[in-house]
Length: 52
Image 1 (cartoon, one colour):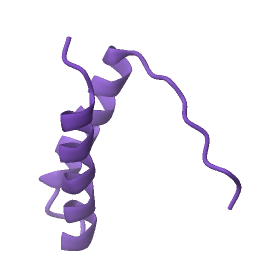
Image 2 (image 1 turned 120 degrees about the vertical axis):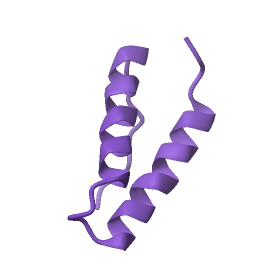
Image 3 (image 1 turned 90 degrees about the vertical axis):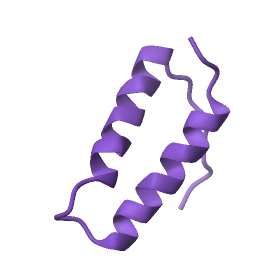
């Protein structure tokens, strides 16, 4: 894989990402591993992103 590059999203765009992750966490059709990864990412992003 190539180098990872950071990219900026607006707070509204980050909210869309968080909402999508939240929906993924509770989607029972996905594997437990996929939901756990979504939850871990959700928690990390929510902690690291500044509040509006």
